[in-house]
Structure formats: C-alpha cells, structure tokens
Amino acid sequence: MSRSTRLLGAILSIALAVPAAVAADLPAPSTPASRQKKARDYFTDTVLVNQDGKQVRLYSDVLDGNVVILSFVFTRCVEACPLICQKLNGVRRQLGDDFRNVRFVSFSVDPEFDTPAELTRFASKMEAVYPNWTFLGGKKENVSFVLKRLGEWPEEPGDHTTAFMAGNVRTGHWTKIRPDMPAAAIADTLRRLVAEDLGDGESPPRAAN
Image (cartoon, rainbow, N blue to C red; front, side, top):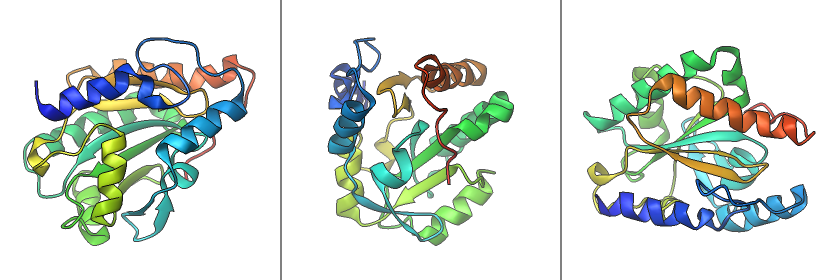
C-alpha cells in the first residue's frame, strides 16, 4: 500500500474531520448550518486557480452545496491519469442527465508545471471539457495545503493515488471509491449522494458553475 493511500485511508477513517462520517456511516451533525460550518472550517477558502485561469475559493466556489467526485492528476502523466479521466468519462455517461447534479473536481499534484493553459490542453485531450468538470492548480503552497487536507501530497507526482473521493458537501457524507469500481456503480453512488438532499427535504445540490 502506498504512502498516499495510507494517508487517504487515515483521513477517511476519521471522516475528514468534516461534518459527517466517511465510509463509516456515523451520524452527521444535526443541522445544515453546523454541517456547513464544519465543512468550511476544514476545507477552508484556500485560493486555487482553475483551468480558465480564474482564482476560486475551495469551499465557497467549488465545494459548497455540491455533490462532488474528487480525483488527482497531473498533465504530464501518461499512464494512470488518462485512465482516471477515462473512468470519469464513463461515470459521466452513466449519469446521463444526472451529470448536471454532480461536480467533477480534478486536482493537479504538479502545480508548478500545470498552469491553466496546461490544464486546459489536458482537459481537451481527455474529453473533459464541461462546465461542471473543474481542474484545479495554483500556487504550490496553496495546492499542497489542500491536498494534505485530503490526505494526498505525494513526494513525486507519479506517486499520487488513483482512488476517487465522492461526497455530498451539504449532508457531510463522504466515501472513498476504488479506481477499479465499475463506472455504473460509481454513478449509482453519486446518485445516492444526490438523493440524500431530497430525502432530507432540502433543495437539490446547486448547479456547478
């Protein structure tokens, strides 16, 4: 098991210190306000830069109110990362119309090289150009801080995890997804996360922008 996988597993085992259980099905905080505060405090509004060159705040602009699936890539990767994007495209197709209710977020683990221009080229090459599929880079220290919060800061870009993390930020439920999980099963997991809002009588996740 790689160092990054162990770290990710440890983070998930304590529910990311965000407002709910991850994978352990522990009860989430009882109110939307408390869940939101815990999520904001944990993820923070660290400023990153998306593939369009726009500065975005991690929690407020990317995560807040969304069902998300997180992945880790770098544009010079020629082995695992194309397969990660291929799997995500399979998930996108399996979701069909439900894709609009999910935000795909791909973090660069090589931010010094992965400028917005590089991320844009990579997204185009990977057929990942959609309004709700965001690629994030930025200042190395900011990206490092965010990735460490997610249990993912490899010493070398090629050592990054190929696993996914999926969560409903509004309800605070997160789960780790193996990269070999079928796209249809991942799509079903995301649909269940979306349905949590409806089951709680809350509004569906806001559309990614």
